Length: 462
Image 1 (cartoon, one colour):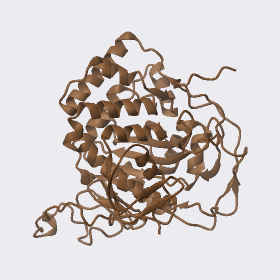
Image 2 (tube, rainbow, N blue to C red; image 1 turned 60 degrees about the horizontal axis):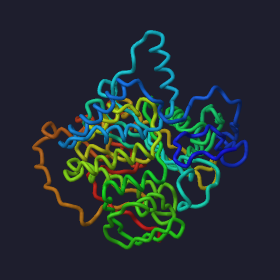
Image 3 (tube, helix red, strand yellow; image 1 turned 180 degrees about the horizontal axis):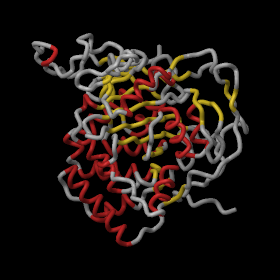
């Protein structure tokens, strides 16, 4: 059989599952759920087919106008075409449903700016070594979603919430094209039917509808950090991880390329060596990344903007509706003017339990219910205090002026409804759903995270 062309972007729909044919995990009460019959496939992979000429021109125009709007500089038609031509897509279950509605004479899905209740987008980081070279270790023949993050943008584009799901979180994986129908770590969902299966898994776990999704691999992280010229990351204690080759002394380091990837991948080098610690360390990077992207030097630098777009398009798999140039542009524009303090990163609440395998974690459904109820209601969220298992406040963070103290609770829009401590954990039984007068849901102490405005440092694993 002829080997695939090294530059091909078409992804084969083979069985990428790692390990044996079945991975049952126990549920509470001692029962197990095992893999069952495969249903009709939900995902189809491959490069976009050549579109109708008018649609191709419209896409180029949309991308060109978007970059003008975002950066204030013009973009050549070739550059726009070059980005659009690099896109690879995957079909989600919701894409098929939307197509069926249109085929039956119904209305097409609304544009991103008109979607009721805000926007939900899932970003998955794959550990696959396919077409990634040999710099990341041996190819084990599988594909796991070791990074799974849900982005919610509010309907009025005033705030955003990013939820990171621990890779070792035990969840119910639904029926998917290549397996599923059992309980396992969430990072097995990608091998059970690709990006579409991970979307279905997170939808079932969160109760949210997720119409947009993207998958990125190792080289994509490297190229995007290079396009930015590096991301400054603060380290409070030595990070020394021989598994990923990361060694960082205390201080601030402009990470890019393989160094940025190694920092995001290190688990043994931060916190207590767990994936929970890695998530809080990743939030240090992501917060700095948001600050870097929103800086004037990035948004007005055509080279950086084009480099980011090209790196993303060339190294990511996008769901069909996300691959539309106007949709990508709308998402970028919705984040452009958002206050950094209104971009909140949190880890899905979890705990160690006797009913899950050693080293795995169980979902804290009570705390998660508060989190996702706020997202479902399109409300902003806040953590009790910034930081996590592997991150602390940067002692050298820029100092901002303290706001004047209000004369009474009514004068303070952030004052809690009951006049109590605004950082107190939410009472799940409270009639106001634990929200403050400004509509912010303060999450329980068990939900760790920070905002993009919080300057934090990653903590090494002693």
